[in-house]
Image (tube, rainbow, N blue to C red; front, side):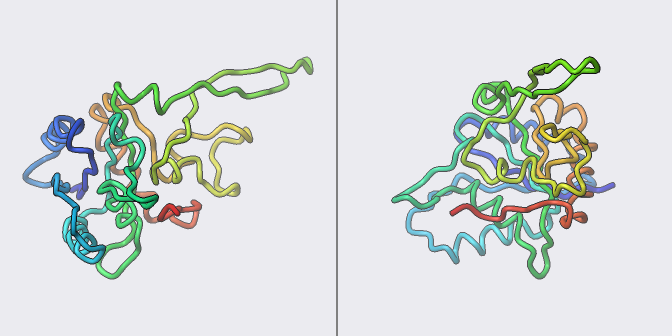
Length: 209
């Protein structure tokens, strides 16, 4: 199927990854768009909004490239002043002419240590002994992508164990390693597209305060 995607990225350390991903899509069938590295100084909220609405108009899935400089949002005077933040929050809007986009967060190797941590799960084995399992978990970071992970409503949770989550189905925004995403773009984009039609299953966070 044709895929219409928007790539959200930090230009300084992400433009090479963005270019590589864009080249993996079918230029004759897919629509790939992205923002530019523009100076926001003096730009009003309305100007930014109109610019991004135009960019996001054809997109149904937003890919968030998590490079080291893109993990946490930039702030100015305590307020978010960040292209990626605006791109994701406008992607999550449900407005005339553009329904809520699906989300995929793709992290590069250099950002892994700031995103993936070790978590612990306490379980009881068949003999009644208490056991501790360790497994990769997600560190907290200041990003709407993070706020839309592990956010499935209890009645729709795929993983039955309370403190464990299916890495794709139990998050509105899947978190995927860059190489894994490159090797199976169709799967992750199609899954994000499917979840945008199942918004009722997730507690969606559309903006940060």
